[in-house]
Each structure stands twice: as C-alpha cells, then as structure tokens.
Image 1 (cartoon, rainbow, N blue to C red):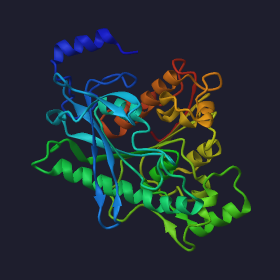
Image 2 (cartoon, helix red, strand yellow; image 1 turned 180 degrees about the horizontal axis):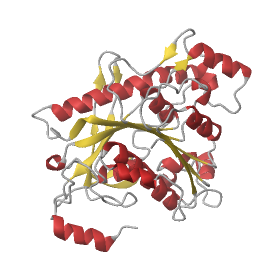
Image 3 (cartoon, one colour; image 1 turned 135 degrees about the vertical axis):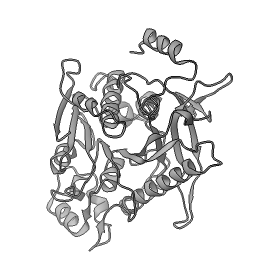
Length: 378
C-alpha cells in the first residue's frame, strides 16, 4: 500500500525535499499511493466583511520534507493526520492546482482530511471553508438549512478569492503556490450540492417546490426547499472563475435541481456514491443522468454516506454514526479510502494536472471489483 521500497528509492534520487514534477502535479506517481510531496496544513482565519460572516478555511498543500520538531496536524483534537502543522509550502515546485472542498451538512472543514492530504501529496492545494451555522456544533432547522443553501456557494467563492489573493501576495510565504488557471471544486453531501451549483447547476425554486410538493421519495432537502425564496433561482455567484473539474461525493438534492437544473454544468464532473448510502442513495443516479458530458460515475458497493469522510476513524460515541460505520455491513474503511482516493486523484490529475491519460483509469477493473464505473466524454 505504501510502496516503501519505491518511496525510499525516489527519496534517494530526488533528495530530502521530495520529488516535484516541475509543473506542480503528481508527476506520474501512482494515483492510489500517498504522493511524492509531504503535506502542510494550516487554518486561515478569514472574515467576509460584506456578509459579516466568518469563513475559517482549512488549507492543505504540498510541502518539502519537514525539519526536526515538525508537528503532525491533530484534527478536532482527536485524529492525528499525515500533514504537518504550519510548515513551509513547496513553492519552488509549484504552482499547483487549487481544489475547493465543501463539507457536508453539520460537517466541518476537516471532516475528510485523509482525502485532502492524499490530494495535497499528489500535487494539489486543497482549501476547505467552514460553512458557519451548518457545522458539527449546529442543529439547523429547515429554514436555517435553506439559508445555508444560499450561503454555501458564497462561502466557497469568498474562500477561493482570499486563497488566490494570499497566493499572489509577494510578501506571503504562499506566494506562487497556487495556479489561478487550474481550479477545481469538490464536496460531500450538502457540499455535493454546493459543488454542483458552483459548477453551473441551477435551482429553479418554484419548480423545486412543486416537485417536493408532488413527492420526491426520501429527499432530505425538500423540507429546506419550502423555505427558499419563491420566484428565485439559485446559481453560482457572479464573477466566479470557471472551475475546470468538479467532484461530487455522495451528493444530495436532486429534488432541488430536477431533470433540467444540471444542464448548465460546464465542468467535467465525477459523481461518487455508495450502494449503502443512508441519506442520498436515491440522488446519485438521477444527478449523474442529469449532467451533460464530460462526466463519470463511480458507485462503490457497500459504501455508506460517511465513507467519504474520516468520521468513522474518529470513533465518536454516537449510535447513529456507529451504525453507519459498522464494518459488518459496510465496505471496509481502509479499502474505501484506497478506492476513493485513487479515483479522485485520477480524475483531478487528468483534468487539472496535465495527465489526461489518467482518465483511462475511470473504468471498471478486476483490481477494483467494488466499483461500478461509467463515463461519457472523459
């Protein structure tokens, strides 16, 4: 899994700083392996003055080999990661593509650190804004969920602009780290909805409310749709740079988009879901069907809703969560991470990393029998 011999060989060849591709990418490294870069982590304390709203953002980035005394990131004070807290960035190996990550309903910016660390090790900068009022410490009502649906795309847009500004600032230690012309977006669950809006999806509120009133089976978003402003359309913020890749992980809210709301998505999109998803199982296939090509689908046998997060690793004493993490009924967690990380890296490197041939790995294979894969135009 870790290819220790290969990694040590590369370290001897490339030196203690790790191997860079020279173009801020994975440089041919296997997509399923932790990449050639070490990973740094820091929190950006951002404030959106126009909305009087905090947008605290987690940032993972490629880093050189850390010096003595470097400390591993400790997420939520309960989960030690592979990233190093606050270490310098591998600016000399950049610039790197930037991928924005939107967390799930009542989630947290660091809910999926294994995935974010994996992508950073493969040559991506990953920025994950906190969606205030829709985090792990909140219990949002349906009306507050509707407010979150409006606020989330703006949170990502603000965090994107600030991250790009920091990367362009000559005095910043992150100067030159990010390539503003190679942008991607991904998100989990409610963050999958956010991702699809940012990629060009549109929600006709009147049509969505009519759909929900007529009955959309098991749609967890319909209660919030009732509180969205009638006569309005939810769409990506004006002036937002176009994303060149979108990755929707267990996305919800097909009832919001309907058959026509995803027709405007203009980024190649990978939808990933699981056959044991407890919340958005009914959304995966309709969302994929509604997307225009280029697109791909990866449906993992036995994966539940939390397979795309590290919450099962945290072993929180929550009975509902424990049931969703039960290895007797769900895909093995380590195997799930291996598959999710590999498919995410293949897709993002093929679209943002200058390695289009990696898209050929978005296919079914005896090496990953758990994955049902479809693609069109990728």
